[in-house]
Amino acid sequence: MAATARGIRYPVLTDTANVPRDLGYLAADTEAWLARARSYAADVAADNVAGGVTLATIVIPAQPLASRIMLRFGGMVGFVATGGVGAGVALAASAGTLSTNMTVASNTYLPTSGVWAAYTYEVYLTLAASTGTTLTLSSVVSSGNSFYRGLFTAEIKYTGEFA
Image 1 (tube, rainbow, N blue to C red):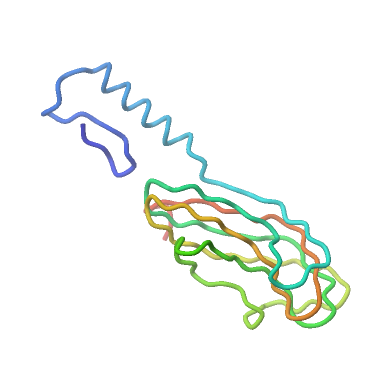
Image 2 (cartoon, rainbow, N blue to C red):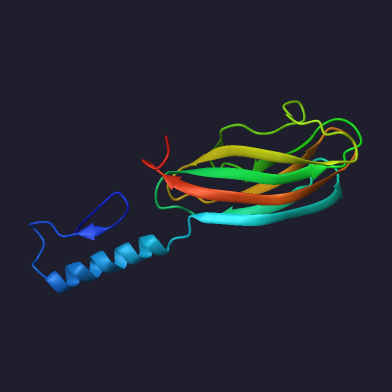
C-alpha cells in the first residue's frame, strides 16, 4: 500500500485486489485525519501580576507532518503604574522555531495608568514532523504589575495552508 503525504493509504497495481479492504483503509485513514484537533484555546484572566508570570498554557501534541502553528493573544491589558505591558510566548526547549517574541524592549503599547486597553499579539511557530510542544503565554511588564483578560489560541496549519 502506498500513502499520501498525510498518511492516507491507497492501492497501487502491485497490491492484491481487495476492494473492501482498500476502501476500509481509505475510510479509516480519512476519519483519523479529520478527527485530529487543529485548534486550541485557553482563557486568560490574571490580576496584579509582575513580568514573567504564566498567563496560559497550550499543549500541542506531536503532529504527523511539519507544521506552522499560528499563535494569537487578543484581549485587554491594563492598570500598569508606569512603563509598558504586553504578553509573550515561551516554548519548551528544542520544540520548534518561534518567528519573533515579545520583550519589554519591543513592547508596542504603553497604557495610561489605571485603565484597560485593547492588546493583540500574533506570532507563529515552525514545528518539525513528529514533534509536540508546550506553549506558555507569559506576562511582559516593564515595571510594577498589570492585569490581563483575553483568549490565547493556537491553530495548526500544514504545508500549503499558509503563505
